[in-house]
Image (tube, rainbow, N blue to C red):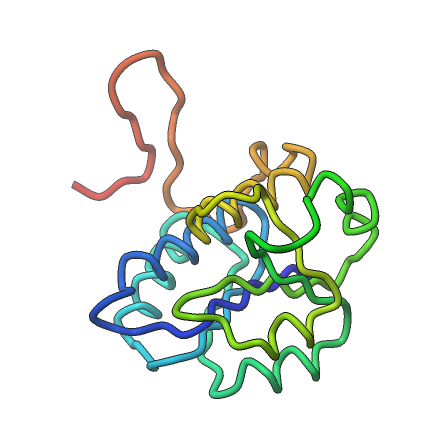
Amino acid sequence: MICVLRLGHRIERDKRLSTHCGLVARAFGAQKLVYTGQKDSGLEESINSVTNGWGGPFQIEHSESARKLIKDWKGKSIHLTVYGIPVQEKIRTLRKVRNLLIVIGGEKVPPEVYQDCDWNISISQQPHSEVGALAVFLHEYFRGRELEKKFRKAQKRVVPQERGKKVVGQTP
């Protein structure tokens, strides 16, 4: 199980960013997104709609406490941060973990997250988006195989082509 924990969702400020975290988590091989902060039925409906149309498995849920989730996690946890150990130095170790909680920030990340996670991992030592960090991490973790993933119960799928857009199963 690969689960992504999105910290501190704020409905008005983060609706697109948190949606993109969920879309990237799903498309790049995670099975679940848990978010803290404000409970947002619109975010949940958006992610569930994509999963229903494009396949899964993928789940989204809200949690009141990131700290409790991290402490109770049955597996290992990593926090993606600019300040961590470079991913290229730890990726071999991390690939061995099968029950992984990936924590990504939102608003200011509390110091407890840095302390409670098993690893603090950086994608670069430069400021960047949690969406970008998550995509790069999952791509490294799965060695690029996530790009060929087939989603179960998909009602829609893209037909690759040089130009234009073709989606099979798309409703008009």
